[in-house]
Length: 262
Image (cartoon, rainbow, N blue to C red; front, side, top):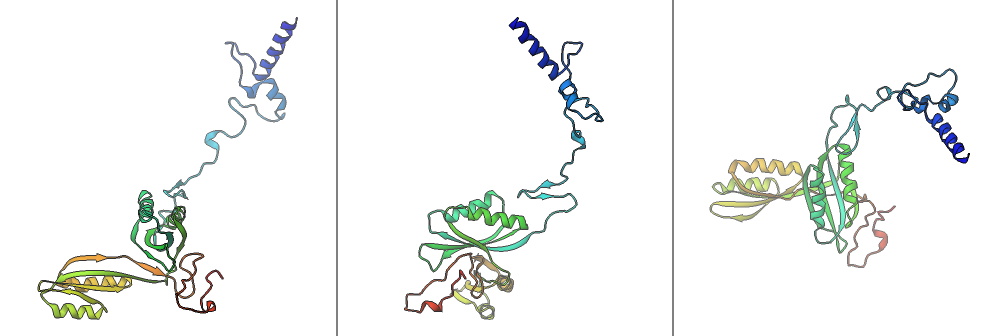
């Protein structure tokens, strides 16, 4: 009798899961007696699947995510790009510059220039890079750079930051007087002068360097080496968040130095 009771209970549970069909199967669970008792009296029984809107009736996002993971609606069009100068304080470790450059290369960021040099703190260097990306791309670039282990701090410079770069130009020397005149006009220096070539050095902001290159082009530029921008914020504003000013070796009252953390 115990075996008959067990078979009876199994049959009852099977009936709750779904009624048998003529071919020996069972109906959909939503049409079972248990689901029928739980369904409101005025609700229609679903023919298949669970209750609710069909997949094609459910809302779907219309936009797609861009390469930075930001969803864009179809009618928005491409996001405009802008130029940004990013400054990063890093610890002097072997390969830190290669790691930073490789980070941007793998993510296909458009780097216009990248420079690196020492700071007032021993063992620290400053990386200055200029990128042209969308707003989301610039934000992603700063976040990814900050994740590198040797990076201490990362910040974006304001539009009126002090920026400068250097260019060395080797031009043909058939007209030395004119070359020296152009060099003086751009407050440059003549580093080497020979019977066939003249090498000059020009420093200034990006527009001044571009204008100088255009002016020397009339003589025929043989070779050129350009550093790219390096920049600092104006006044008391720190170039990177939390940065402190360097102290000279001379005995100076600490009150004369600006506290960048204020």
